[in-house]
Image (cartoon, rainbow, N blue to C red; front, side, top):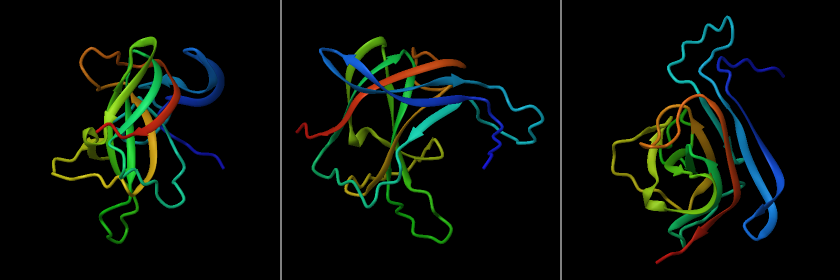
Length: 180
């Protein structure tokens, strides 16, 4: 099956043998190119461009993180700001509403240096199609159905690398922690 997308950004996820610190282990490398160009002849009306992401398969059942309060990850980046997303079961049970709830937090990476980043679950903000929902909502950590990492050409936090061009994020591991 052939798909036709208007944007020309590209990405891949490669699993490699890597020396992450003192340990030799498998590392995921999420890399590609963010582009603001459109496919020639595209009739799509797009307001956003320059986006790439990787998402887990929808879990069979739920991942229950109710006993944990933090997501930790060992990563090495390129100075860009990435987005960590947790998907939970949809709280709106209306006909036609198939999308899961999404909760997002920024993952800011120093360039070419491994770091362990800890994001408290209560720092993940409720979002709808990448926009923060201005409502007092709480994530249900007992009903997680998937996770993702993504990158945008625009946005992020002040001081982070932005714009079109190549990106690279290495992920050694992602874990749930109980810190309190």
